[in-house]
Image (cartoon, rainbow, N blue to C red; front, side, top):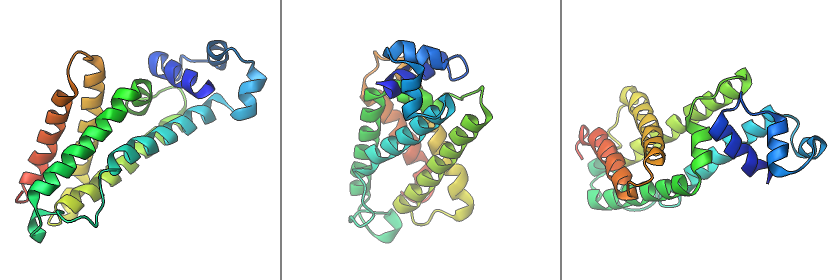
Length: 194
């Protein structure tokens, strides 16, 4: 209850504009009850950021296994299988986005008002970029180290931008967001022979 209310308030009002009093009022508990579970508003927000980042990554990775056949066009494996797996990963990622809009906003809208929370959000973005780099290399083993990091940042930022765009346009079907993300990743990978 506390986590759901805090997520909603942080996403709708922003971290700096949300007080502990706002959170406990939304849940209907006392401050001591909140402090039994979380040391501070900062700790609550940091734990939420970490949890949601892990859940979002896990949603997509349920459709990925580096041991499956079909990785990498240069390795002689099937590009069609890569495309299907990539589509399933993106669809699972978007399903999580759709089911957790406030968590997505908390993850991707820049936070202000607390240097430590800002640092953690930035660190999580770096970890997301590193995850994207590893995935890009799995799908395209020929991707150079020099290219992997900036292309992974494009991918990370593109995922975040499309997620926030889609949440701002709830009338648009998931297929529109999926198509945009697949086009982005296909464009990145096509440079390497896909």
